[in-house]
Length: 44
Length: 323
Image (cartoon, rainbow over all chains, first blue to last red; front, side, top):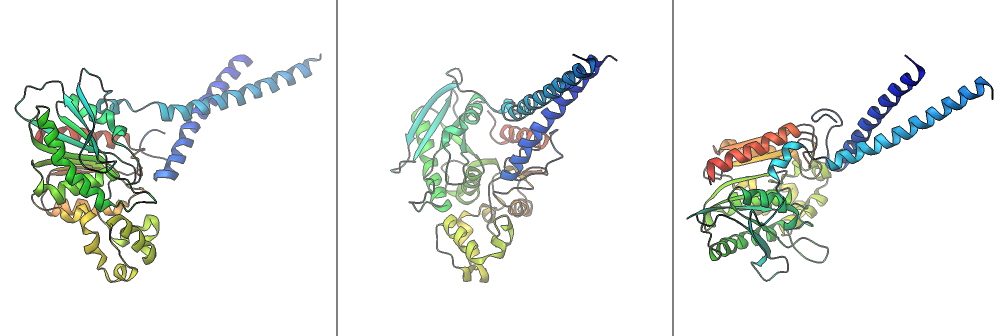
């Protein structure tokens, strides 16, 4: 795999992880306000 | 420029790009959580249009500024009888408005029901409004809503009481406490996360189980009567909070019920909902109780169970208030 391809894959992984973390952060804040568990139930 | 320096520059640029992508994707994740409603929930929410029917807004049922209701009349006005679906707004008894539920009311109207959203006097720092006074306003409003529907040519022969949170509490009080005085039979009640009982030991979410004075204060405000810490200690407060404790009014004739509660609720005690569940079971009421085990007051983490709850609502509406 070329360096450019490797970096493309890495960027994709970073984007997916960051997207999931963004949703998890909202869930965390909502749980603080309303109550709830961080994991389980809905996917993120 | 040497190859080494070029490589270092390229790596730094890529790290910067990673940080930028991270921030953008993180922001997109945050926005998506708010902006994208679960696809199933759209089945129970309709944007109002004249194609659905006629909206009569801000009709009066009393002298108070908040004594207003909105009436959603279905397009088909040729039937002999209509079911009335009342949906009461949320807001912790201190805020909210009937307009907050316009999409829910429009959905009910689109199904062929006459739907009504009723405002009630909210508790403020300068008034003495309580859950008791609010429940009495709803009790006074229902006959007026039915009269108004009749005046517009829609004969009401049965009633569903529903609501969210505070509105759910008020809907249950009407359905269980006031049903026998209702102009038409209350055939069904549904809602979510409404407080239905006031036992000190259940209210640990606010620390009331360990503080008699705080418990007396909050229960006094909610019940609209003076309750002392002594009455909390000797248990005599239970009689004083009974008028606002819907679960205490459940009997074998109570309306079929569909409710949902969050196990981790921080606004109203989950334990109180178990008392409601027991009362419904003990009295043989046809009911469905949904526990959202990962959620709190918003039922926000249990889409699958929330969907089952709404499917049960539709099933019970079809069974007890058929179009």
